[in-house]
Length: 233
Picture (spheres, rainbow, N blue to C red):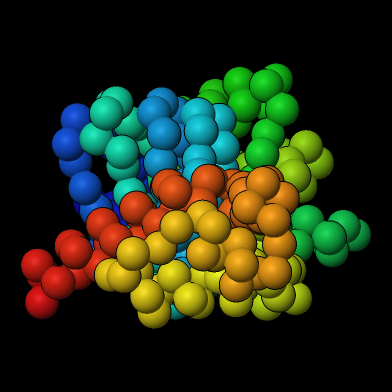
């Protein structure tokens, strides 16, 4: 009996989320998570920074960073996740192309062109079959496919809205912190725009550009998150 894929350091799963499903609790783990959305719409949060994912988007989460997903409950969602340990990332394959590993340096959303989305889906399905029907060669095959996945992302993907402090706009960061602290108070777009010292229209556009979602959706997201955490605790 061969070791499980988790023991080998690379594990792949495909899962559908039915209408009304919610996963609004923060968690972290000591391995990388590469999330690929096949269907639906998802809000993905890492370290209190929120991204909106659409079908064909990739999200990478670094080890030990707190994150959670929020499904809107209005549509079915389906995704494929690749989980891999630090030691399973095939760094020795990229000696001549060190920038390949830039993909694994920051948590964040990656946008892929339509053609690359097709290639990504096919690649992940190949990995999924190898994961579900392992033999003595599966570990090597999954390592090779993980390298191909990282190459595909690096060649054609665009990382957006980095979660590093250097990548955040100070004004938006200030607003996010304000919302986190005052989410249970009445908050309007005009109130927040005044805090940011911007006009409501300009602030609204800027907020959407920086976070990937509207101010109203973000505020509702944070309120739902806190309500679920209160129920859990």
